[in-house]
Length: 79
Image (cartoon, rainbow, N blue to C red):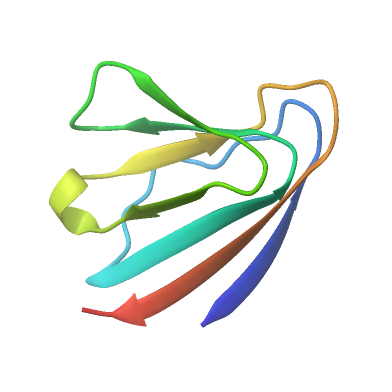
């Protein structure tokens, strides 16, 4: 599954898992932030950078902490 996400300034997801799937994501435009259940610190991804997550990291939330719009591409695959 391939999903293109458009994020408004300040937009975030609810805390969620991935139901046994691996997720790779890439910031196409702007910078995206992530908070994982298993980490104290936030992860920050800059334009062009890739990240990945699966359920071994627990649930997570994604954030647009900027005052601009962000575009990210997410690829989901069964593990």
